[in-house]
Length: 293
Image (cartoon, rainbow, N blue to C red; front, side):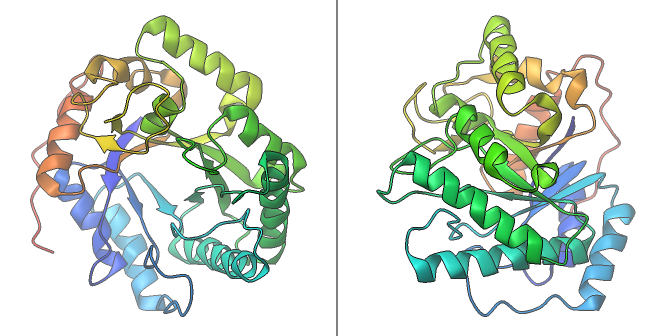
């Protein structure tokens, strides 16, 4: 697995690869825009997207993924919110295409009281709408599993499989597995048997071949708490050993695994060291230089 973290795009998204190298990333996750605004997004400049692509290679970043705006709700029962969410998601796909990134990770959506079946159907229909309109033929829409608080959908892999089954472009849909969300949703993978059981469940529902990325987060909440609260690796309820089978799984060697917590350089360095201490036969890279960007 190519290990990394979510990097800031402050000042310019083109600076994210250098920031990633500075904390020891092989992979990075970025927002392509503000994660807190749905409208009036400033277009990416050609110079910026070119610099981003060049900097990925220059700073030895093997994989990069985009995380979509948090406010997008492709299951919204409100007509205006659904329209705004769909347009924003089309923009996310197109911005990823411009950046040369193949994966846009997104939270499936919340049904807001309309029920699971209606919400799952709405997400599938929204994905059809977006994928048929976006000028982004090389980009996958990557569903992230959720912790399942409130009416949020996607906290079981059966729900995610149902979205994919109802969608018209299943070959454009992938999965991002968030370890904190998985644990909070009630899947216990802290032992070898538990991990193998989780993999069997994934294979029987969405399929292991559909996994395109991982979010590597420990959990402040207990098993099955549905609490989306991340923690430092090894300091939460999953614990350090709970990550050992995953980071050594050869099936995921070419996939990115990105930290999202604690969001600062020192914390990322510490958590990456913790994860790499679990990898069998791992050889530490040469010391990376820091950046002030």
